[in-house]
Image (cartoon, rainbow, N blue to C red):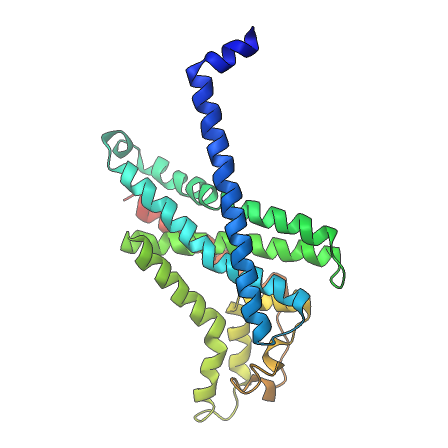
Length: 263
């Protein structure tokens, strides 16, 4: 009788339908991210940047850096539209500041589910790469999710436009990742670029993945002549150092975005 009442109750039926709808959206999002992961991996394989097993994780890092800002900006944009109602406008500044971390977490549910799926799959099928490295790599990916979402939140609070905010974050990623290629024109004016290499490596999020995978990516055939770095002796910073900088940047952006949302 209790079971029959549950199915006849419209509130219960509506709740169950909403839950199943969320599950369906999550599954579709995970499938789309898996497809995009394969595309990025194929591009990296054509560039011959390393072994296939390593390129899969490098592609996953690229995917997270691409997806997390878009998800964060989309969620903030929807919240901003709801905030225009009279009820939401009555929220205190303290409540407005505290709501941002929850919004960022909710925005990254799809990416976190994708990370969970890849963690299980790669941990079970770990061959050349040890399982503990797979776990550490996914810890790095979670830091990237937080960092990308926080940076996107700060940029979105300036533009209040999803497309412009996401494009700005992508430009920032392009500078952090491709900043080492700016050393080539500087080589004509500076005799020794050694002191400048370390800062560029510390701010590059992909270096954390390269360190864990023991990839000397700048000495691969595709990148060897694009940057003067192979001519110098340098040591890749440890993965936790790079993640530390990313976490610091993410925390700073989250605090600034929270303050701006409360105004």
